[in-house]
Length: 260
Ligand code: NAD
Image (cartoon, rainbow, N blue to C red; front, side, top):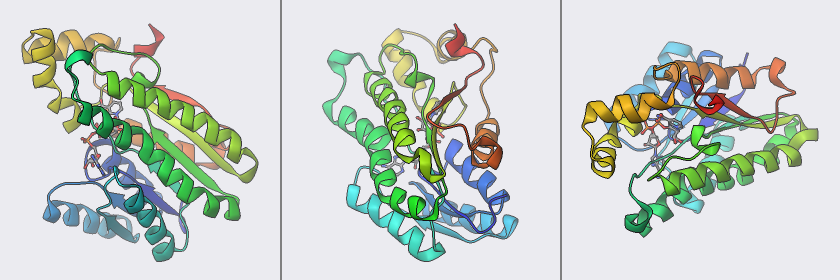
């Protein structure tokens, strides 16, 4: 379905982003992967995607807090593969603390990575998409783009902002064959969720088991974590021609969380 097209997935060295990068490669797209982590492990993933799916790949170490590095990553992708057709803004971090104790540098970092980086990638990628009259912009938002939870002030603010950014871009690009949508997962078992358990234990005075059952899965009527492959399948669908009328949407994949 995506043969001859190129995808860039930010924050794709782990979790949801890696699953989306692999799923787009499985559809034939060349892929730029991005994110932090162990160099050898990243190289193994990158080479593995090429070997498994017969596509070309590129790894960009661009830091999503640095606008110049972000623009450079988009430029390098276009120069290497000839185009950037599918842009997935997925990089994200979390920090859990009451607002009066929330570290200012964590607020700045979360707004930069979870929100501003999408502005910078889209700004750089849209001219090429407009000129080719085709593009797919997919922003990994969250159930927290629709509802709030206590102790996540920066994350909830950034994700609500990302939903607004997405709608604006959808309106500006609607006549150019470009769609822009949010995918909003509930809890997906990835390092991002695992890492917030100790701080949530502290903020709420709970054990790890209580956090899993009474905070995380309590929010989800299905009482199950969403899987990274389920999220990736939705991203693939949004890239299809069948989804060309879906733009400016915020698609929940949250086991019923935001229906409550
Ligand atoms: P993860 O920790 O497994 O992956 C995060 C990725 O972002 C990693 O590749 C990491 O290296 C990258 N990253 C972090 N800081 C970066 C920076 N400064 N520059 C470049 N890359 C950076 O987490 P995940 O759960 O897969 O999260 C992916 C996205 O999904 C995030 O935007 C997150 O908010 C969103 N999300 C996750 C869940 C969940 O329950 N896991 C739910 C809803 C939304």
